[in-house]
Structure formats: C-alpha cells, structure tokens
Image (cartoon, rainbow over all chains, first blue to last red; front, side):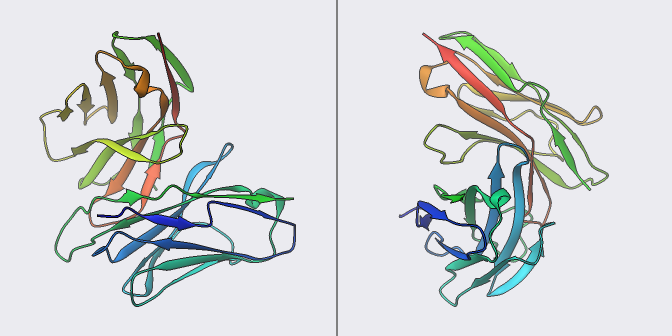
Length: 116
Length: 114
C-alpha cells in the first residue's frame, strides 16, 4: 500500500508570491491534516479536511487556506508569501472512521518551502 | 488549550545503552492519547509508540517503552539497547479523543554514538 505522498518535495518562492502544495492520502483514508514545522515554532497544526470540509483549523492567518477533493486528495495554498512562511509542510492522513475515538495518522515526507 | 513540553533539546547516548526522553503535558481533558514520534534526517515522521490515557499499563513496543504518570501529567520514553538508527528528532504529542489535531512538543534531538 502506498504511503502518503506530497508534491512537490522542494519549492523556492519569493515574497509576495503564492504557492500550492498537494497531499495524496493513503488509499481509503478520508481525513487529511496539515502541519507547519519551523525551527522556532516547532510543529503547528494548520487545518484538517474530511469529506471535502474543513473540520478544524489552527491559529494561522487567512493567507493559509486549503481544500479537499472528492478523492480525498488535499491542497493547501499560501498567498502573499512572507519570509516567515519558510518551513517544512507536513500532511497526515487517517481513516477517520465514524465512532472511533482514535484514528492513527500517517505522515507524508513533507514539502520544504523556502521563501526568498 | 493543551500544551506539551519537552525540556531536553538535545541528548546523546552510547550504542547499546538506555536513554530516557522526558515530556510533560497540560490538559483538562480526561479522554486523550499521547504519542512519541520519531523524525530522522529524512524528515519522515514515524509513530514510535502510543498511550491511551484511560489505560494504566504503560505501553511497550520492542525496545521502546513509556512511563505514563497521569496525575503528574508526565510521559517519558525509554529506549533500551540504543541503535545507531535511533538517531533522530523525537517529538512528544497529545491528541484529544475524537480529534485529529495533534499538539506537539518542541522535540528532543537524540544522537546515538558508536
């Protein structure tokens, strides 16, 4: 079974540009969560998508947005990039089965975004 | 809001020895899960071990075990017979039951020396 895949793996942008990152979950997984990892702030939750709806959101500005498609693939978009957006962006997928209190999350390899 | 604190930014251990990584957390919830994740230089986040808050028995996975002290809100990871492949960042994480939002500590960089 293929794992979580993220594309692209590396990305270089300049301030003011926008960027779109993609995450394909494990087959059968319907929930996708996004995390930002920086040396200063560590790992921070961005948002979670399930059944094409945002279910939970972290404390990030509106420049950060996402969406999920009917095949459970998810994209996140960052507009008007700032230097501080340079980070490793990780996505994780889970089955999110109804009635289960816990669903194991599986992480992708991440997208390294550098903003110049 | 939940918080997770890892007080050891870096640690080192000799191969074959035992090392313990510390983690404390703060929550008012009763239904939650605690995890240790490993992130090697390849950056792939890997689940090492999970502990359900309602279980009194400490979780064990081969060479990895935890010391879960619920009243003290402490959750340490013990790695026995350390191997070179254990070199990685280790993150302690909290998950409220029914949620998908993981709250991570800042991590501990573990180096296993030959």
